[in-house]
Amino acid sequence: METVFRLFLFYAESPDPLLPKEALDHIAFSASISTPFSVDVSLGELAGGRGDWTNPTDYRACRDFADDVRDVGVEVIRYSPVRDSSERANVAVLNCHAFAEPKPLLFQNWRAQVDRAGVRASCDNPRRKLDFGKNDFASDPGLLEMDWDRPMSGLRLVQGQT
Image: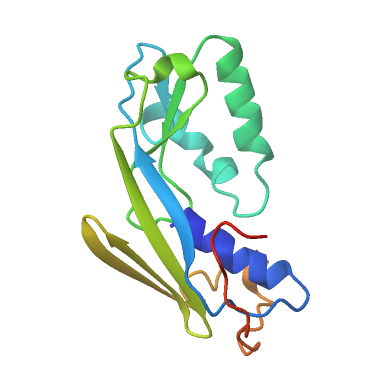
């Protein structure tokens, strides 16, 4: 979800980029995390700071908190992402010692097609599709000036060439 938001933000903040004709490739991975040094800011007393930590444009409170807890040995922060209305859990790994395995457990190749309607993301293994309409993040201040009526690129992207 955050990757799609960042795509929207890129086009909103760029002066006149054409929308890509080709889908954009992204790699997602999952990893096993294990540490006795973690903090969960979505529950209990720490959830009280949620107002500062959920500002959609100012990340200073999050960065300051991460710096503070890293300084006392915390390796992982569990949190609810600001743009996920379902408030599913996410983790921020602050120290590589928190990874339980030396390699990721799973890689997924995703293709994101950006067009005037929004973004369609698809994964082949496991087969999954997600659609994000142009209004899904409309309340975010960074997207208020997004021009969705821009032309599509006539260029064909060839992987491995610049």
